[in-house]
Length: 546
Image 1 (cartoon, one colour):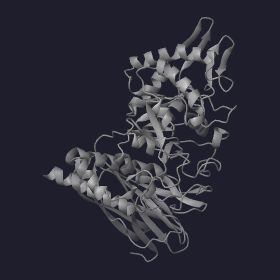
Image 2 (cartoon, one colour; image 1 turned 90 degrees about the vertical axis):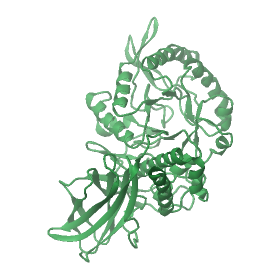
Image 3 (cartoon, helix red, strand yellow; image 1 turned 90 degrees about the horizontal axis):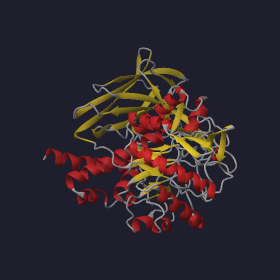
């Protein structure tokens, strides 16, 4: 091979920066259960003047895709409350954008004295068990610059269906604003479905549903673009409601394989003091009838909810969704909001009987007082919930979880993202929530950003927190963090399969010595996770071959 190009085979958790120092191949052989998607990288370093090359893929496997790993600028990388276990704390360019490539256009740019990488994905869903080569060549004209082969062993056992409920909030107004589409236009529905389908392919099975414009990350007194599925009419005889668009939303989700829904929050974030923005048809035309000037516990909005929620829950029952729709009251209330939240919670419980209530909160007293059925607790505050063996417990992380816990910030090593799969298993967590699937705006939704240039919501949140997909011309483009978290979900499924076959005690014995099984620790390197996963695979294999 040419001496002009160095190459390395790496796992998905290795982040290849232009200035990386890569010593040797670290992952030349991998294993997967049938039904898994497995990723690896081919990193390359060019020693001459800038040039162009092409890649070639040779493999007997039928579902293999290649992406070029593109760089994302990040300014806010290491928060002041962050620990020292970041791969880098400096602003710069980060490998994150997985730009789809194809055999029709297999061109890559060779930058002088920089490491770059190709990201290869093998979908094993339709493949029989066996060992398969995946060979990648890089050539320039007739000259073959490199040839590397990764060997994948597909085990004779299938990854089980995902049990964990996983939601990552889809911001449909961001789709409209980024693509310049009218909300509820045919093009908007088409593009939104692409994002929902892509999310479902990465484990999302619980979908935030904008009954009204979600009152999330909105500057008090301002408002986000209206995205309201429920048709509301204010007449002399009272309130009337139409659910045609909501039915269309549910049908779209079902086409994408999603059957659980989160009804958007019925009160504003951080205290539940006001109503969300709600527009209605009136005798004077379409008007905003509730919003920041509405007292959340006042008689007018209470009367509205008493009219609306019985109609809504009846509609959900007609759709056979009882038990599959979760209601939100208010996002992230604190201890000082307990009395207000309690008043509103009792109202919503009375009006939505038979449907679970869930909210992101970190004070155990909210659950202890019976104000929420399904607490969603931040991973750095979850211990009291675990100690009380809280059933139906969800976990979440966002911009504040940067000290000693897993997260997906760009500055963190990839292992710190993926290690959460074991933690979810170890603590029998029911579900996981992340707020930023596609939040392409600055903090408080004050303006739209270019996600290819701004990764920190305008300097508000650590880079990598606000979104996990980029807006491609024809639909979503994955960030590395999205793929690593999906690998964590696959690890969780493998652990659950091993438990089904061999019992909980046998599985726990595989990881008992690992301190990162708990939420308040993280894996230090990718090798620890790969070694654990290999042990889990071997436990499954021994049982299936017995």
